[in-house]
Image (cartoon, rainbow, N blue to C red; front, side, top):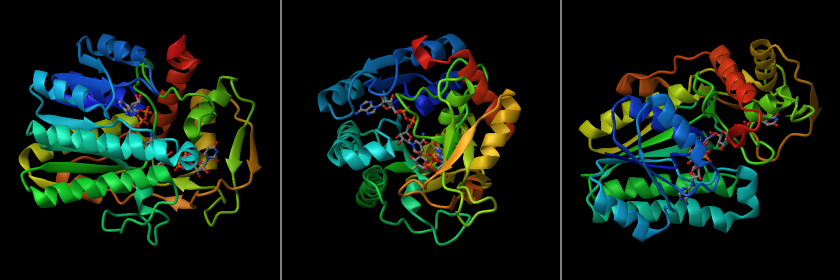
Length: 337
Ligand code: NAD
Ligand code: UFG
């Protein structure tokens, strides 16, 4: 049985679907801080399978211990966390408490119950502004410029040291590039609270008329059209990468790190054009000041995951856009309708 923390969230709900479809038994632990139980219901309807849902906090050791006590957990997929970069700069302690203390509680409960396999959701943010592109796992971590990024680096280091002290652990740290898109049913997708921080959800809300226009943060970066370049990866490719990583750590002890990206970069304006095409809408935009902390370009060298996990991202930018549009147009108010 798998413990999936954060399984009601954007990526976690897609992971849950994939796990249930692959016949895994799953316990989801989520406090619904940034998500809704509706996502779980939809995953259960789509897969025609059930999970065990526990509404609770990863910082709550009693809750964690009761899960490990009651269910025979083989491995943990750890998605729970707060992820808004801007909010983290205003409330660093909240982020340290939730993401670092929460992960620490989880690891302590795992150790108590001798569950020693974990897949952790990290981020390309740990590379900072890289010296070289594409970014391989060999690229050193650099001190993140915001508290959210710091929590990812801190948890990665905790995991590394746990493995160093006890080599019977198996840990997969997955560094995501820019997850976008939705399941192709249009039943589950990304449902941000308030104004979206990320590019694709913002564009999608402009397309359905919830926002007037997109603000493009800077057009004088050293890139082919002056706007920022990122490695956008379809959320279904991303969760398939987790299944491969899970298989790997079942058979290989130790600490492992993989980038999950496509290896290709796209600019903000590329994304606007691709979305317009897929949705047959017009996305008005205005160029504004650069956003603090943004870098010009970030894309993965995804060879290591290909070689070791036999995984690579298969879905195109067109798929990402069509699936985002299907989800957004069917659910203009997300899970609340
Ligand atoms: P999300 O906010 O949609 O999902 C996170 C889930 O964790 C939510 O359902 C939330 O309610 C839950 N949660 C938060 N704190 C919790 C706590 N203390 N106890 C129990 N549940 C808690 O975010 P997401 O986009 O699905 O991201 C999942 C993971 O991937 C996060 O760790 C995030 O930092 C990481 N990540 C995301 C991105 C991205 O762009 N979406 C990029 C890199 C890494
Ligand atoms: N952008 C805009 N307008 C917007 C939003 C974004 O122009 O309204 C631009 C940004 O400047 C950037 C690109 O679109 O050039 C992508 O921005 P996102 O906010 O979607 O993504 P980031 O690359 O900034 O950050 C994301 C996650 C982080 C994670 C990082 C690396 O939000 O949590 O990817 O994985 F750390």
